[in-house]
Amino acid sequence: MDHTKAVINEGFYNFAQERRKMKEAVKSPVKSSLHSAETDIFQRLSPVIPKNFNLSIEDSVLTGMRDNHADFSATLQCFQVETRFYPPIVGSVETEVDDMLPQIIVAVQVDELNVKCNRETVLLLRKLAVDSKLEDSILSIYILLNTLDVTYNHKDIYSWTVTSFLNSYNTQGMDKLPEETVPVKQDTVSSASTWFETLASQCQIKGIAELWSVSALMRLSGDAHCASMGFSHTNAKFLLKQHPDVQEYGANWHFLRLLIEGCQWSAELLVESLWCHLGNSSLLSDAPLLKKYHTWSTPLFFGVFLVKLRNQGSSQSKFNAMMDTVRFEWSPPFGQFITQGFRCISEYRDAVQRSRMSSQESVVAVM
View 1 (tube, rainbow, N blue to C red):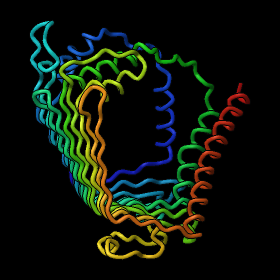
View 2 (tube, one colour):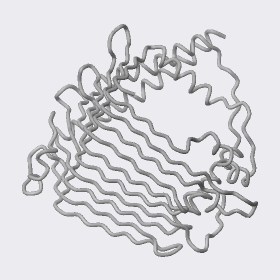
View 3 (cartoon, one colour):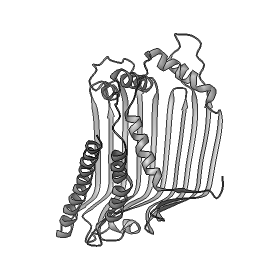
View 4 (cartoon, one colour):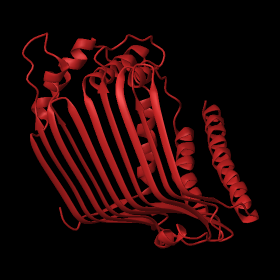
């Protein structure tokens, strides 16, 4: 698809809120045995899943309208999705998890995503690529991100959040009486959790994430309370595979204990040129210079930060860390920025509380 355009009107937010309320009310939880959840799910979905799927969207524009003017706009140069699906071969009841898993290849790529709010760029993404493959009970994931700039303007984002979501939720509360909801039974949640636990315990998971040139600018109160932070390069690696002898655990924190104690795992995180700077500008281009000397109004800087974690047995873990070129700076403007940050968080908390109270009062008035 080329040169696509879409417009989101005010009714979309009301529709999204209504769908969220419908999901919260689950009328009839589905009950299924563990064996059925594990062995039949792929057999049921295999006929409808495309074996080869390609989707490409280029030069797209998404516009949000409110009160007959543009609320936000997003442009996308290219979005591509490519998948390959090979269904599993399940021949008997004794089929192992290794044989019932399909072979899946998924590749996603996003190029030049630009989101603007009130003519200000709030998100700029140059390139994002995600390649994943599930084959022979080995799940491999590779993520590459190049140049991500995020701008948070508290005045605009706070106003947009309250107007688009909290106010629309109150309007629905006045128009409709609350419907009787049936809570989700624990059996349904536990069966799905057990299915994921089984897959995680039988599959080897390998992941690599590489991020380049990431920065965020926060404007909390005009130009008086501004700060930016980011890093030039980050590399994260993760490996998880099942222990030869898996122990049985209780019901409390079963999945977490399975990952920590029942699997062999290792993780590595490398961060280069991590910085935080006060002001209305980014220091991403000056990151190499920060390794040589300190720049005023830079509260935090890490030249290199490396952390390695791995377990050597069912109850032994190893932790290694290394830091190079660490600088801290405290100043009254930095303290004022932190104080203003807590005030912004309080504004969100108060807005949510007012929305809930207004919704409850509206329902009582209608009844």
